[in-house]
Image: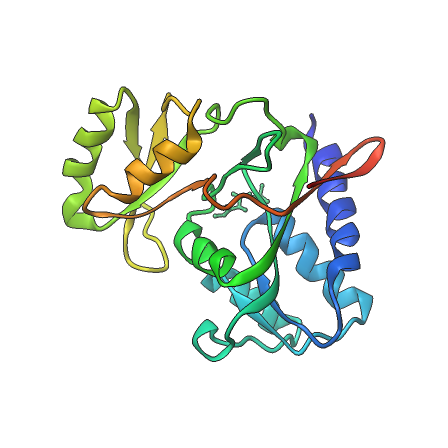
Length: 222
Ligand code: 5RP
């Protein structure tokens, strides 16, 4: 898919997600180019939200540039809704996320939210997760140890060069991880000392995926 079509789909799905937003909400907001379209669409819609809880410094910057009030999660309690993108989604709305490196805060805000509406263009749809390299955030001193454990699991970790997360950590992009059992892999990675977060959303998939295509926006939910 060329970049103009993809951009048009991102803008289309961003507008569709506005349907889920109520004016009195404290809304969780993710990170990435699709979410940036959503923030722009939210600002342009004139819909007023009480505040947003942001998943990254980049998102916080864009929200503030639109005059949207940003609230710390510690002061917000449970959120009704979280809107974020993904790098892949499967038929069970399980995701790979973290291409933008914001996976840890994204997973925290997901967990703090009652409903996660994931917004994607059609290039993100897969039958089985795993073509996109799986991001794993690690504390710097554990980088090599965790990489060896990933190799022992049959995968090929690659350090994301020149990148530091908002939490001061590193990202290993993991190629060729067998993800036929994504829940099992997510649990296993969660248990590796030195791993902060992995980019699998399988234990808690998105409740709704909105996918834009040239035929319109399709909703996947239970
Ligand atoms: C950032 C993410 C993003 O949601 C994911 O990378 C998709 O980004 P984009 O909307 O730019 O394709 O998980 O950490």
